[in-house]
Image 1 (cartoon, rainbow, N blue to C red):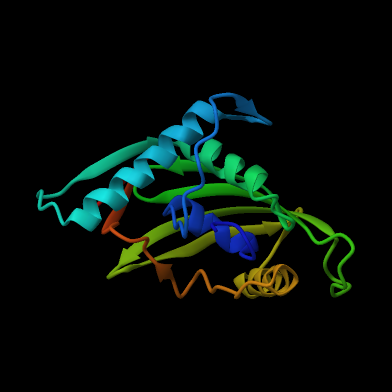
Image 2 (image 1 turned 60 degrees about the vertical axis):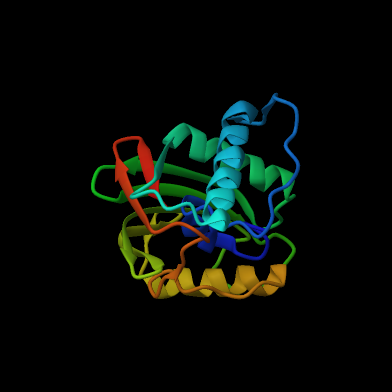
Length: 197
């Protein structure tokens, strides 16, 4: 599942649509702060990419474009449907040349955490997305926890804690994560992302 145990690492997972399973589509309706119709479009797109990749269809450079709004609706739908316990909010802004900005709300309420962390934290970031080989990685330009600028190693600590409390494996965003099955490249424009497969 996309968000289970991933905490802030879901920033990259959500953008590259890493899916271990596709839940049954729900009837079109609006959830809290998102469009179910947009989330369904992304779910159908993921299914199409997986089917075409499994069939080994040999088109030269197939791609699909998703808007920032569609991606954010999909992320919000997954957080809600998966009943995510740590990642409460994740919103992305997408710019030209694989630049991203984002906001994530992390909730570690009721957990034993180091004193330098608050139980509920807002993470703001700007980053460049790099695709190298079969991996995607984020290189952070700016990273803020609440209103304090932080170094990436603090984010690593938050990811590690979130993974521990959710039973998942910690992920190092700077080392990169495997691209989802079938995806070969990602390129962004203002308010949209093109996925090549």
